[in-house]
Length: 233
Image 1 (tube, rainbow, N blue to C red):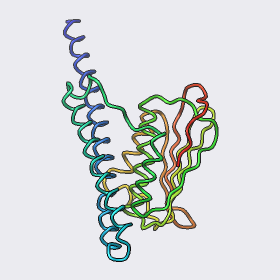
Image 2 (image 1 turned 90 degrees about the vertical axis):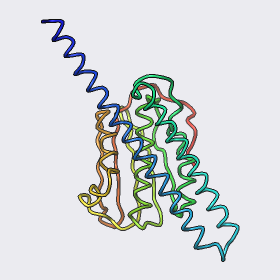
Image 3 (image 1 turned 120 degrees about the vertical axis):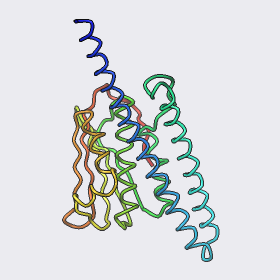
Image 4 (image 1 turned 180 degrees about the vertical axis):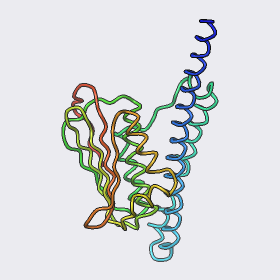
């Protein structure tokens, strides 16, 4: 009887692990596809609009859109590899995006027509791979939402390091969407909130009184001070 109960408990535990992993992969799929398709659509649209006035700039915009498509395909291939490797639970994994990759993300967003800058405040600490990926994805999804829904001209990203936690803030100057309405558009904000809470953190999204929208995440951190962290561009 004890062996039967133990086997049952193991089966329940394995099922829970599989469910969490599937949810994680579903979140990855959403973030990768939503961001990549947004960049391609906006890039092609912008290139078409300025083709006659500024052919050189239009060609560069289309080139970046094409590169975004290639990058999206690579990300999707990585996720499919995870799905094939025993349900995504084992096997070698390709490198995940990190906070140091934000400079490339911001360059891509700028090409889509959104002015965006980033400020890092405080002393960075080393993050685990999963936590660093979540921080990156929160910034990525917040900027993707700005591009898709806010009609913003500019956005500002702040990484604020404090003892024991990292604050991630993304603000834009677009049309503020009420939070309940924003949450009903796809799974973007819900996915960001899940990425924060899975590490014991929090995420708030709200329209700003002066106009625009803000996403603010607080993520608990652990680790030693990381000297000489590269600046973000």
